Amino acid sequence: MSDFDWGIIARSSAFLAEGMALSALLVLVATVGGLILGFGLALMRLSSHWLLSVPASTYVTVMRTLPLVLVLFWFYFLVPLVIGRPVGSLASALLAFVLFEAAFYCEIVRAGISNVRNGQSDAGLATGLRRAQVLRLIILPQALRAMMPLILNQIVIVFQDTSLVYVVSLHDFLTAASVVASRDGRATEMYALVALVYLAICLGTTKAAEFYRKGLPT
Amino acid sequence: MNYRWDWSILFKDTYMGWLWSGLLWTVIISLASWAVALTVGLLAGTARSAPSRSARLLAGIYIDVFRNVPPLVQLFLWYFVLPEVVPDSFGLWLKRDLPYPEIVTAVVAIGLFAGSRVAEQVRAGIEAVGAPLMPAALATGLRPAQAFRLIVLPLGLRAIVGPLTSEFLITVKLSSLSLTIGVLELTAQSRHVENYTFQGFEAFTFATIGYLVIGLCVTGLMRFIDIRIGGAALRKTPA
Image (cartoon, rainbow over all chains, first blue to last red; front, side, top):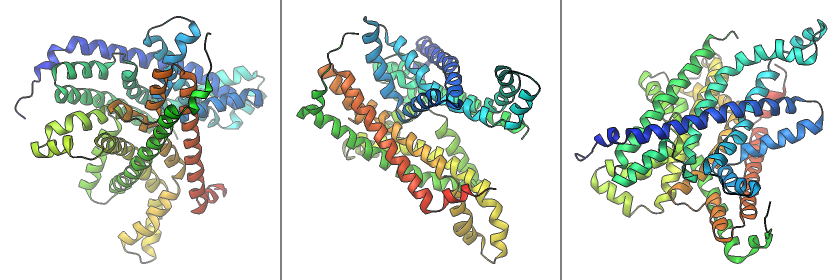
């Protein structure tokens, strides 16, 4: 027990910071891309035309049943095949994350929109607004407020999910730490650090989401 | 796109054997982890709404910590770190004598992560549906422990079969993490077949369909339970 070497953390901090930067990039791209695509999917799912709603709900159901690891492998294999030349694993991982998380953001957006009472959109239409205007001016502002805590929670999950790029050898925060851990035989120190850093960031965000939700009018 | 299709590899002895054994391990690990998650989740979720302050605090710490560390990091902690920080004799036992070490570790790690999520659902069910019935149950002459066991807990649980279905599905998906410590479950075996044959399409399609079928079974099972215990009927009646 006495032979821990916590100095290893300071010595590898630059490498770990690079890993954290990649994790942050993945969270950012997955969240922005996932929200945009998820918003489109949610509108499709809410559409009354089956040609729009059925493909969207099938997509969401399938994506939500598959493990992210398998989706990462799928894209790692598919993207170079479709493009016709090798691309780095970062490109396929980013695409996999956007398409995977879109299914989850879709459900959040859909729940947010359908929880706004019907009367709201009827009233909007009655005042002479067009459908798109009702959505933009009346439904979305209310839906967005209710969705915020759920989106924050999903960001925490996405951040935890980014650790899975370990399986396609991208150096995110966890993978960077595991590289140091096996190179220097310092598993205990490195994984303890990784767990504490994730815990601090995720717990902080979770509590912020809870605090926000408590402040919402019911 | 330039790809040579060959679905027959899925029926070649070796590869078919790998994929089916992978499917079997995925089912075993999922079920075992779910059993751990349900047990721990029920205990911690109940403790979260217990009268004792220290029980509530302890369960709260468990839920906060295990929910907020990525499951893959937890798996590595159990697998790489635990044997190093426990007393030597126990560490040696973990490394040398524990049967199926990767699988047991995966089940414990995934089960405890999922358990913290289940605990939150149990607590929510008790708080929203069960707890309001407590005064009525006490008024009928039940003692507090009886009221909790006979009224609050069963009715609270009946209300959360839906969320528990999602947690069960999440547990199935989490079983794929065990490939990082060398368990050859479904995802690992499909990758394995891809590496050997370069027929990634066929191998990953098998895995995809495998997860979809498991998912359908889980959803069907939980819906069956929901109907049997009357939860579905309960939700249909207008409030």
